Structure formats: C-alpha cells, structure tokens
Image (cartoon, rainbow, N blue to C red; front, side, top):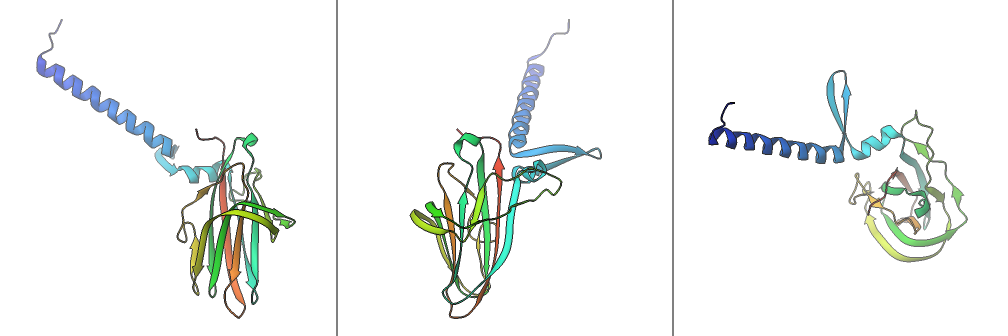
Length: 202
C-alpha cells in the first residue's frame, strides 16, 4: 500500500474542491442556459431563446395610423393561476411623431376585438393562452405601471426601448394605451411579444 504524503493529501483536496466548484458553476449555468450538442459542438442558448424552440414564445406586430386626438388600446388577459403558466411580456412602440404610452395594471375592460397571436416558432402548433383585445373600452384602472412620452422617431418599451420585460400577475388584467400627441396624423408601429413559462415561482 502506497502511503500518501501530506502534500499529496493537500493536492487531492484542492483537486476535489476544484471539481466541486466546477460542478456547481455548471449546474448554475445550466439553470440559466440550455446546452445542446450540435454537429459535435456544444451550443448554449439563453432561457428566453429556449422558449422559442419549445414553441412557447408569441408575438403581435402591426401599425396604427392615428389621427388628431386618436389612440389605440390593447387589453391583455394573461392565463389565470389554474393554468400554472407565467407570462414574461415585452413590447416596443415606435412613434412617427410625438406620442404617449400608458401601461395599466388592474385594468378592467370590455368589448374589443380578440387578436390572433402568432407563434415565433413556425413549426409549433402551440397556441397562446394570453388573450389580447384590440381597442376595448377601459372601464377602470387602479395602477399605472409605465407612463412615457416620446418624440418623433423614438422607441418606447422593452429591449428596443427603456423598460425590461414584465412578469404578469396571474390574477390581474392589463391595458396599454398609445396616444397621438400632435395635431396631425401619427403612424405608430407596435410590437408585443411574450413567452408563457411552464413553471411557476415560489
């Protein structure tokens, strides 16, 4: 039997600690990113990108030509708590001229046209559980989350603008108002996107 010296013991301990640290880092990284093997190469993608591959990422995109004093409204109903899904929501709005955006939480609305949402993964048959209504009638709203006024050619919103994504409360509804602030027509491009997580947070 080979007797292990003190130096050998120290080296062994250092190696084991290094392996444990590397394993912990890998687990943490895997929690934030997905790891795939493609053509014998390791490929990582972030969590939101993985939701595209899973068919859980949806979007709406169009434009509205707002006349003097006009506005466009979106009423948003996320899945309720019984669905065990959370909505990570993002948006971007581009104004031709000056415009205002107001984002409400606890917004009660009725009527409006239910919009057909699109799955970013065109190979997926998954349908969004989030319902978005175009130009509903806002009855009441208890809280303003965002209120922004932008000048000509400016963006407001998430990754293309000033705000991060929002994780909706499953028991509340939301409204977005986009308002023309000039005395002429104002073309507004809007892009709404979100993914619906298949898990909940504690």
